[in-house]
Length: 113
Image (cartoon, rainbow, N blue to C red; front, side, top):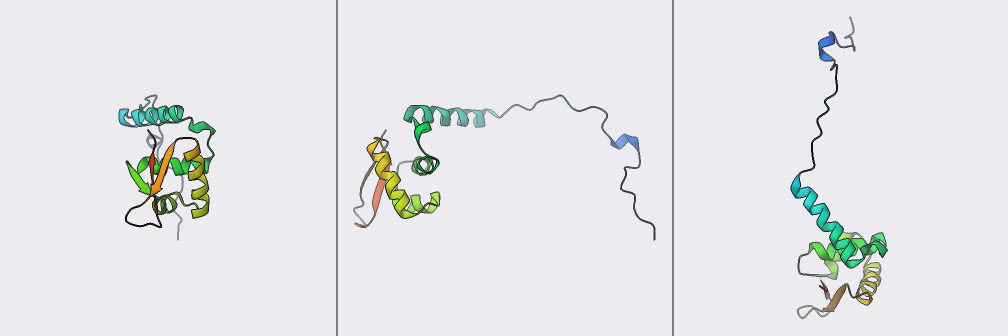
């Protein structure tokens, strides 16, 4: 039984020139990237560790307030690590934490803006 040839059967299937057209980044994405850079500069997030940034962005994504269980679930960090990071962020005046009225075992966290 004859094997199929791997080579292309005609020269017309090989592109002679490479397109020189550059597709620009879409405006909404570019605006979003610039917004993130402004947030990093405003809150001086460059000095935070990657774990601290992950916790901060988890709080930021939650819009207004979120609880610690949500931060643990979304960041993938252990509860004790999240508590340590929250204390540091609170000391740096980036967030504020207070006890939940509905569940006294849970704390609610929000950005201090």
